[in-house]
Length: 210
Image 1 (cartoon, one colour):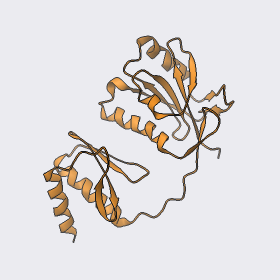
Image 2: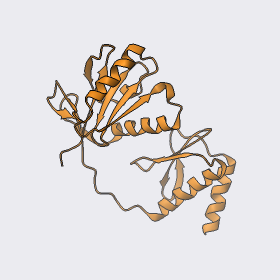
Image 3: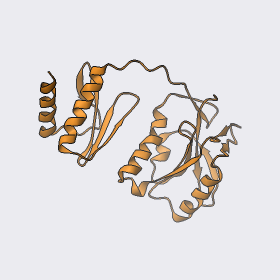
Image 4: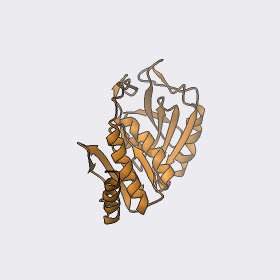
């Protein structure tokens, strides 16, 4: 199986394409209209920043649709990327408050946190993932208890987990982010605090299991 690759393109109002460096700010910038070829997930991601004008918005989708299942050959690197991409997903920053859009955006952003090497100036190649280490079942149980405790006060949430073992739970007041370190729950940077109700529920659930 050939290695999975990715490339970022910026699209202008006349449908002109420019190859750009593989940096995540290009799919966060409100001024940008970009196409991300993602061979890992078989997806062409289209990012539309809030400040992108109507002319560019109309131009970018036909450009991306043309390259579905055919891919894009880098003019600089001479490498064909995206032949396996059979799905096109648009991420419009104007709708970023929608949980579904947020989830799709995070999936695209996760690519930039993976291990990859430059396969030229603009094309990157993802490195094979190392064999998964066995997860301590106590760690999984502790994370499950915390999530269950959060659900007691916020029954409708979105739960995610990164490859680094960081759990994120989106609730109405913000996002709780934590990891398990030395058998303890540890909030990470960017997390909101745990309210009293969640803390009480967590302690009670832990006591019940002892």
